[in-house]
Structure formats: structure tokens, C-alpha cells
Image (cartoon, rainbow, N blue to C red; front, top):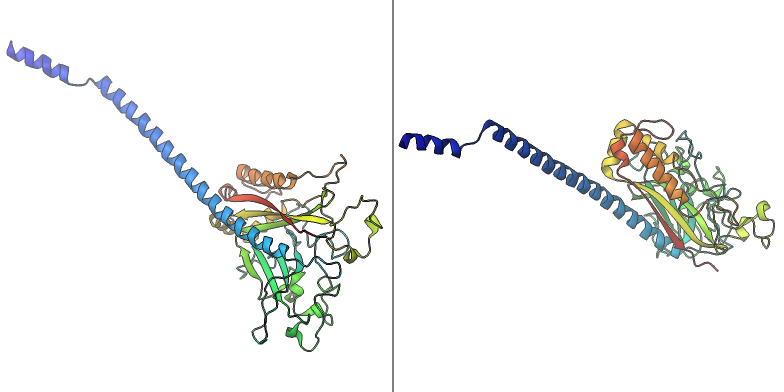
Length: 358
């Protein structure tokens, strides 16, 4: 009797095979759910870190631009190198209208005089002037042995109070209060043949190379700007072609007389990639980063008055569509392969800089 009770108690204290299988199955589900949660948390953290990298770079670039634009010499008797279809070299070194990087320039380029400190040649010993020639560009010269390739650069050439370039003592010339200095085409006898031709050049020639350029945005590979006019229109012309009070309208032959007097603010859009994403793209091809940039379309004038054109935000939305397309298809809109993971590290930013022009 005692032995029988012990056997029954032993049977009641154990688990059947079915119970064990159910327990293992439930435990597997729990482990799977926990693993998925940890994977999702890791992915979110990784994406968050990428965004922190790009957010930080964008903030640094915009803060520097804010200082430069705030101190810009906004006079009609000084020269600029800015974007517009006619005059000033035309479209500020724009690119191939979203057709891929085929030897043409992808991003805009801008140069202007600003009351900020700049660099002097080491051989020049004098008090530094706060007036500088400032320029921004994405380096598009050559991917070979060029650490600045596909990165946003800033140039600040210091001028002294006399308004001449002492780095070219054999041929001094005024650089501030005289039109045609920035936009003059570099040539062997012209003033821009040597010292500061890189302010308006961006190719493989010697004229586009300048040791005083510094990388200000290592992750910025696309740079585009346009104008908010005082009448509220957004355009890639620094004046309103439809303004009846503007002499000549589309046939202006001397835009220097207008300068930036009709511009309320300059809007800047940039595309920024985190270091991991750039490394993935460079592993495919060093040129691929500018292929992506060239598929990000230029700004088109917003004509207003209900007549077509772009609205505020359209440009940035189009750029985001390119990034989303790459992440989904693994190639650029023009058909070039790009790791989809790299696109997850690209973000688009925009900021308006008030010129406070008269």
C-alpha cells in the first residue's frame, strides 16, 4: 500500500512529454520576441546615432554660414559670384539637372565679400583685416588622392584695408570696391589667374586649387541655394523677372547694379551623410557620392501668381525621394548601384539666412 502511494505521488510530481514540448515552444516564442525587441532597439539606436552625426554636421555648417552671410558686404558697388541664369557666370556652377555626375558640376558655388577674418600668406606681416573673400563649394575636382573630394569646403581669403592683394606684389589690384573681381574669367594676364581663381572654379585645373580651402562639412555632399525675395517669391534669380518696376526684366545686362538688394534671405539646402554610409559608398566607387548628388535636382524658380513653379519645401522633398528610392532599390535614379544601407545615413536640411539688405 505504501509503495503504491509513492508511485502515484511520483507520477503526479512529473511532467508529461506534451507538457515539456509546450513549455519549450512557449520558451522559444518568448526568446524570439525578446530577440526581435533587442534587434529593433539596436537598429533604432544605430539610426539615432547616424542622425546625431548628420544633425551635428548640419548645425556646424549652418552656424558658420550664418556668421558669413550676416557680415556680407551687401553693396551694389562690390562683386558677387552667385547663382543666376545670366551674368555672374550663370547658375553659380550648377550641375547637370539630375542626369548623373558626368564630368559636370553637381552643387552650387558661391563667393562674396564678408567682414570676417580670413587667411593671409605667412610671408605677409601686417595687421589682419576683418574683410575677406568667402566662398563655399563641394569639392568636385578629383577623387584620387583628394581627401576633400565630395565634401563641403569653405574659403576665406583675408584682405587688408588698402583693398589689394599683397600675395601678388607684381600686379596689385583692388579687390573690394570694384565690380568684376570675383566674376572675371581667370586668364594668364588677368588678376584672377593666380591668387583666388578657386573662388569661382571647381575642377581638375590648377586654377581651382587653393590651400586655404578647408573642409567645413565632411558629410555634406550636396549644396544648393536659392533666394527669398522681398516681395515673398522664392526663385533662383536674385531679382523678380516679373516685377514691372525692374528695368529690362529678363534682359538685364549689368546685374552688378542690382546686386542682392532685392533679396530678403538666402535659402540653403544640404544633403549630409554619416561616416559609415560614406564608407559603404566609397567601397563601391569613390565617384558614387557625387552621382547621388547629381540625381538631386536643382532648384527651379517658384513663379508665384498661381503659375506653376516650385513651392517652399519642394526641393527638399525631391531630394528625400531620391534617398528613399536608393534605400528601396539599391541604385540611384540614374541606375548606378548603391548599398541601400548607406541611404539610411543620409538626411536633408534647409535653413534661411536673412541678409537684412536695404
